[in-house]
Image (cartoon, rainbow, N blue to C red; front, top):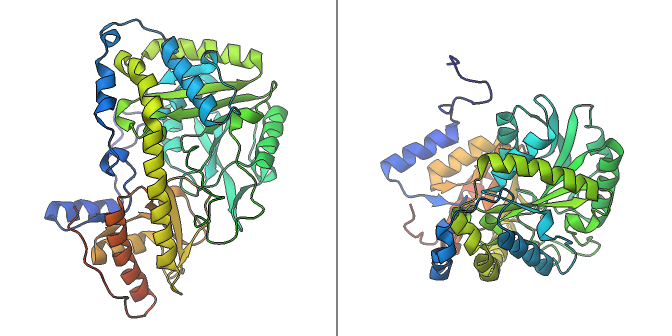
Length: 422
């Protein structure tokens, strides 16, 4: 039905086969082992009471709208980023703009950078959110490839081939979702040169920046020699670039419900001044970040290391479990990753990945994402969240292993008892 609706607002009634099968399973009350859990509050990583007490300060009752965000909150973000990035993240409060979420930050950036019909380059494979957000702003997206060899790589020449007269910005995520690719120093230099050549803005989503494990023993399936150390984008922005780095509480502090994110402007002083003025106008139109959250932000940032430490330990543990599962011949391959919260499995190409995800759900009660959700092409892929609670993850891997053995035409490995998970 079209009627009075704009093309940018799709019909929400359209669903895929896996979504319908999952809905039926939940309606019946059948057991479910969900290996897609990426919400920290649903993954047993809820904040302590101190996070809630931080909202109760007297200043939270006062409303003094600041379009870019309260100065104290922006100072806390700048100081925290400088500390966590070991001095390589040259941000000041004047460079920081607060928003209610990274999704809102993207919408503001698309408004600021693009007229309707212009385009943003986005990575493929990649998270589908960007295309939806751009479409809601009347903006097009065009994919550029991340290539897989011994690791995921960005070839700047391939990216440049996608640039047209309508291109306004290049979007990247480091570590990337779902592949775990991270921006190396060499790739960053090439990107900066390309952006300068074509007068483009780099939008660098670094919400997973604290979850890089490529150089840690046991993370990668193979040697770690020769890997370039990943680099925060602002460290290479210099004085001539035009760059925006994104972060937020959802991934960096495990507080998605508190709804605070930030943009940090980097590069040329003239660009930063002009961008800040336009973002201030846009932000003043919405005034979206609540006063209690801004008041509590310094406290949340101070306590976020506890979450990052607990989450990091879980990501490492679950990835080691995946390594063990796939060590049996014929079960598939765990693709290389430098970090992030996801793992990508490539299966022997007997069928498409949605068919495999459906069969796994029906036969074992295990939920995973099919690779086509993320535009993974050229094979059969399944995507899992490494943030899943370990007991659920282990039980889900038992079902996954049994399914993969049946798929390969072999007897299943002995099963262990599964917890009752819904």
